Length: 332
Image (cartoon, rainbow, N blue to C red; front, side, top):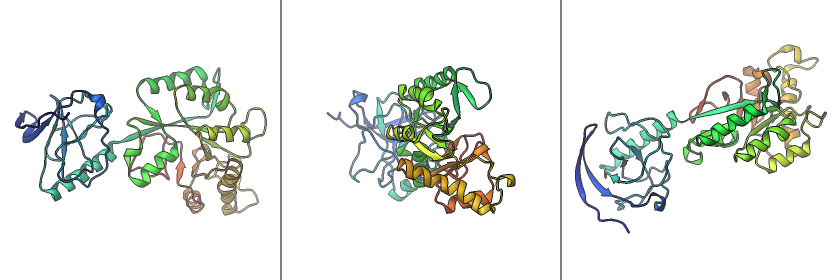
């Protein structure tokens, strides 16, 4: 049952004096989930304990005077109604007591909520990991020991990170919608198509409930004991692994020596277009992303990739991504 609502005047050293409607829930696990990014409500919800709090919004009826919220992993942001700093992202907080501030006029509040959304999108960062081959003893920078990979995945799992595919990230970027992503997302990418992904890495990913995006160059597939087969790739896809293109033959796509007798446009058509067609035919899935072999590309190659319909182009440049990052220059 909803407890009695009383109006209080609350004074805080870091806050202005607000008129607050008190609402306290006895059990956090009985409170419904409140979505973000729905901004048709003429209310601002201020949630805090003894320390500065956070601001949420939800699309609710005009006459609603309370809001139910449950989420242990919330985003702390800076209030646009006052000049105090609220904190860093993804901190934990207890959800009781919860207090609500009714704000007016409606048009002013709507602009405030829109600015809050921009702050959330600006500060939301995603790390993309890159791997190639999984072995017992690494002998070059493209190999990682199975033990080290397990340690890295365990760390992510124990610290509350959840994996998404590159396609899920791209959808969020194009739609400017954070609500489709977990609170602490990471992306696991694996290049080339070595069979060690299936035999060594995938069991570890499955153990922690993780997924990955696998970039393959098609001339390598089903070509020797070290490579994945098309049937194995089909099974991985059925298990939730995303498949992207890593070219036809893994060339340096910005280097003229790989063009041979063909003109450059034909070369790009083959490496970008034919590889995509082969994957789509063999696996029966739309290929949306391309990872540049050796991280090498130029503006002509980017233009051709866009022309062929790729939505995400992946580099080897270090750095994290945000909701406002360019999906045609993905860092990892």
